[in-house]
Image (cartoon, rainbow, N blue to C red; front, top):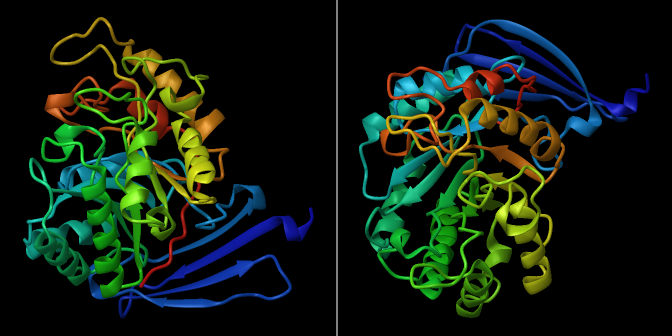
Amino acid sequence: MSLNLYFAIFVLKYNFSFLEERVLGVSSENLVFKVIEVPKPCLVESSFKSLIVPRESLSPYFGLNNKFGIYIFSDVDEINLASNLVNSNGGDWGYVLMPYYVRDYNKGRWQEVFRNLCQKHLVPIIQLTSLEETPTAEDIFKSAQFLNSLYWPVKTKIISAYNETNDKKFWGGKIDPKHYSQVLNSTIETFKGLDPNFFIINGAFNASARSGPDYLDEKEYLVEMNREVPGIFAKLDGWASHPYPQPDFKGELDTDGRDGIRAYSWEMDLLKNLFGIENLPVFITETGWAHEEGEKTQPSYLKAENVAELLKKAYEEVWLPDKRVVAVTPFILKMKEADNFSWLDNSGNPYPQFEVVKEMDKLPGFPDRI
């Protein structure tokens, strides 16, 4: 066994004085030591872990990283269920995508949410939303101040700036790439002006939509964004993507291009060929096949057992081997209005995909802590 092919982590956790000491060893000529204090909101239990993994398992962006995640709402029960799903079978510090309304300043509730995320070892991706409206300059500033006032479970504070804005129903009933580009630019400058640890990714686009009354083709949309704010994409820390299997959320596993689960590759090509942007880490903030089972059966969708098989293959054959992909948070853990996409039924019982993904082998993430 060649030592330089392996990455070793030794974690020593103390349950006194709310202190966690980590010694991080990397197979190189020099040994790197890191000591990190854990504030009181995130008390950890005593444990000792030793792990050696192949170097090819490491993310070029985040080192030892657990890519598994899920889209949830800011609910304690959902946080617990998400941890059971994404931190199972060897996993630790998986991801959750959580929408945040930019006029919600309830610090007590959100700090409790973040405390639970910390205790359950979940990395939040906070997706800004302005619901039926578009955000104002005041919304951007106040939401940045509020989110910066919270104790985050990890050092890197990932913010996704809104959602599918090339669909007019997600941007105040209008298709306005120029305005979104201005908002994105202001979001980047405002959040990073408060704390450079904010890690800003775009709001993922509807890659499969073609131009029409309600949509603008993503390529056209990106060109208009860059025309309004030249170099806007060079300001991003990462790229959010919604690579759904089309058509009708039941497409084939091996579909290439904008209509499949590799749509982010098509987007990476656009960024490179149109704007010279390369090597952005990818965050799949929504994806998944719809299943026919739900409160109302949808025979046009796939059987839940088939969805589970496809998701397992998608992880094993596409997302996990792709070093560009940092996190995958499929839509959605539980949502009554989208129960054909949900991983749990409305009574809380798991669909097959929950159990299948829960049983998959995972890596423990090792995010930097404040």
